[in-house]
Amino acid sequence: MQHDRVWFGYGTLPGLLQSGTLIFKSSTIRGIGMSSSWQRAIIVGASSGIGEALARKLAQEGCTVALVARREQELIRIKEAIAAVGGCSTVPRTYVHDVNNTNAAANLLNEIAHDLGGLDLLIYSAGVMPLDPDDSYNTPADLSAIAVNVSGAIAWCNAAAERFYRQQRGTIVGISSVAGDRGRRGFPVYSATKAFMDTYLEGIRNKVGRYGVKVVTVKPGPVDTPLVEGLDKKKLPMLITSDQAAEMILHGMVRDGVLYVPGKWRLVMWLVRHVPSFVFKRLNV
Ligand SMILES: NC(=O)c1ccc[n+]([C@@H]2O[C@H](COP(=O)([O-])OP(=O)(O)OC[C@H]3O[C@@H](n4cnc5c(N)ncnc54)[C@H](OP(=O)(O)O)[C@@H]3O)[C@@H](O)[C@H]2O)c1
Image 1: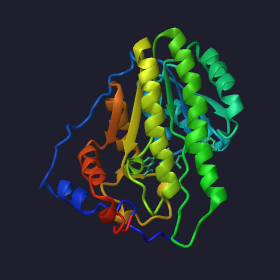
Image 2: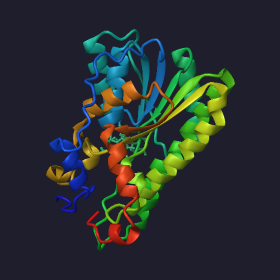
Image 3: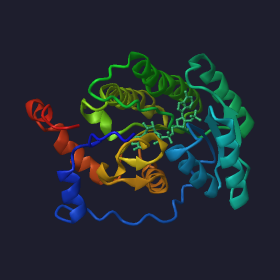
C-alpha cells in the first residue's frame, strides 16, 4: 500500500529549483579520483541502497571494502558483482552483523581493520524509516528506529573515532537526512533520529577534527532505494538514484562538514528551517 502523504511536502521550493527559476547547475561528477585517500573502508548497511552503491563505487576506485549488514545473501550478491566487474584491488569481505548488537561493534570494527590491514574510512549507512500514518503510534517500531539510526550509529562511529584518534587520521561518514532539519508529522521519530545524528556527528567532528580525523554528515533528499518502497515516488521531490547519490557523496566527502545531496537541498532546507512553526504545522509533511 502506498503512503499517500507527500514525503517532503516542500514541493514548491524543489519545483522552483528544478524548473530553472532558482537553478544551480551542479557540475557533472566524473572520476571520483579519491582512490589515494581511502584504501580500506567499512560500510555498515552495505546490503542495499546507498550503502551498496557506495561500496560498488569505492571498490571500482581500488578501495578494499568490508560490507556489513544482516542479510548475508545480499552481501554475497554484492561482493560477487563487484568481483565480476573487476578493477578493485581486493575482493570485498562480508560480515553479517545486526547493529542492534551495539556491544559487538567496537570488536568487529577492529577485527575488520585487522583483516583489511588497516582502516581509513567508516561509512554508517544503516537506517530504517517506519511509516507513521496519522492513526499509528507504534512505539516498538519507533524504538527500533532509534536502535538502528541512533544507537547503532553511536556504537560504530565512536569505535571508528577512537581508532582514528589513535592513528591521527581517518574519515567517518554518517548518512543522515534532510528529514532531520524539521520535526515532521509524517515521520516524527525518523526525523528526530536524523536530528540526533546531525548533532552527534557535529560533536564528534569537533572532538576528533583537531587530531586529523574528518567527519562528514551526509544529508540526502529522497533517493530511490528500498527505504522509500511504500511511498508514492511521484510525490518525492528531486528523487535521485542510489548511484547518483553515491557519486555525489564520494565527490563531496573529501571535505569535512555537512554535505547535502544533491547540493540544492542546502538552500531548500535553509528556507524550510525558517518557516515559522505555526505555518509548518499546517503543511502536509
Ligand atoms: N532513501 C532515501 O530517500 C534516503 C534519504 C535520506 C537519507 N537516507 C538514509 O540513507 C541510509 C541508507 O538508506 P537506504 O535508502 O540506502 O535504504 P536501504 O536500501 O533500506 O538500506 C538500509 C541499510 O540498512 C541496513 N540495516 C537496517 N537495519 C539494520 C540492522 N539492524 N543491522 C544492520 N544493518 C541494518 C540494511 O541491511 P540489512 O537489512 O541487510 O541488515 C541496509 O543495508 C539510511 O540511514 C537512510 O535513513 C535515505
